[in-house]
Length: 129
Image (cartoon, rainbow, N blue to C red):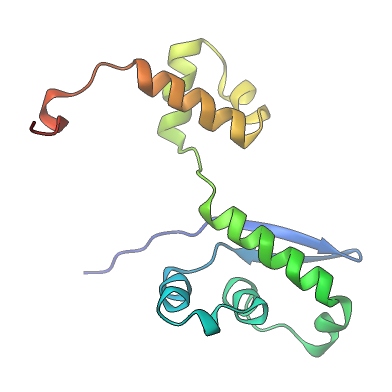
């Protein structure tokens, strides 16, 4: 059996060049927990952006690399809205999917949480007391 979980991606534009990146992998995060010395800026960039050329690293100063690392960590842990959750928001609020997509990700997450908080709790998922 094969399980495929697509990773979310983002782009960094540095000095006019676009660098694609993906969220940090679970293997990287688990390795960082087990051995914090491996949780370095360079290792995180390599995990997310793959091997970069020496020319690419010329564009990256230490400050840029640290900013990339910070953004990668924030992006990896940031909650995302699924297509189904956008449909729920749309049906509950009367907003169109385009209007929802135009909102910031944080606003979408907050709206989703409000709507889900108003939904009746499924008795089969209730924790035993």
